[in-house]
Image 1 (cartoon, rainbow, N blue to C red):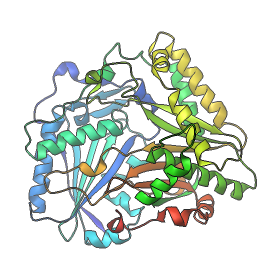
Image 2: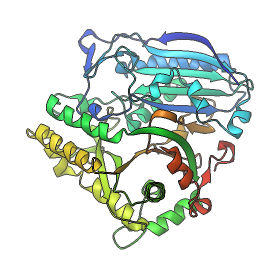
Image 3: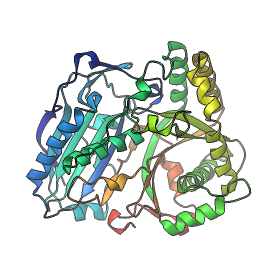
Image 4: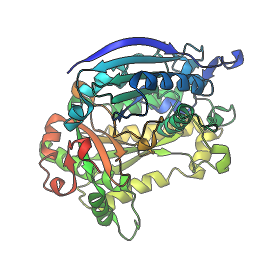
Length: 445
């Protein structure tokens, strides 16, 4: 099985970016990213709607139209503080693979998935990004006519919600719809947030450094169907938590299993943080209309601490929710106010101190359940939306991306752990009744 590159080009915006918008300063929240790119791959089965050549042409023309509005995506990363909107365009790669989509999806190789990306550096936390395109696309055609569309968008500009807004605009253009979402750049208004200062940026880098503990790791996919999700939600329900979300229930369960596996690996109960991102849309004290289609990294970091042996799912979900609940209107006023820099520095130092305890584990969860399977360019919805696997000695471990399933009522968790810890976790007696390990996407709900 081999991926062969056919062509590489830049897809430029249909209309030029005005000169006064040439340099786009990234926001305070854009500094909160450890990984430079958000990478996802959309797999589409063959259809009779269009042949593959015409599908690629539709993708390129509609992308060009969309970039005129999402103009930073047509530029390059200038440095850690700005994007140069020079209209060089999105990096667009065409490729083909010598196998059928159905055969590949029967048992997908999580490491091989990297071959579908425009370049492998997008999954590295340390790859230099200066001078790199903000938007990178690769379209790979299977022998059967199925296609994989890999999208790697810079996390210096866009989060998962912004990514969804961009995709809705791109698919609307591809389908020829008159109406399409337009990006709202309110997060980049001069008075929206105070500028970042070197003092708290240094504290932020120390915090990420304490998270990014490397080691020989491996990625596994855990599929929780609707029945399993309902079971976990029931176990997590209690006096304080009446209606846990699917993401809360699954994240808490995997946190619990990971802590138990770490204890078995090291012989002691180690203190553990569960770090997760909190979407600020809906929490920022502004009318909903002002935040509609807002783009940028509008999230904050919340950290739940567990320093004792805890196997109660209700308690763990409570810790997750309590950490997120602290990021309220008053909290946002502090990070946006005149004392924001000192407040931010203190906040990040506090998390770093917790994570620097002797023998501490840190598990980082990201929620990608944002209408992944609604991405229809005119030839139907994807049969699978994937991330890529990690394996080796130089990857970041204790990292989990939580996706929705095709049916919308299940959860697919991509968990990366130390190899030895993962081997122990896979033997957890609770897992077989709740999760399917590396199940074929063709068999997913």
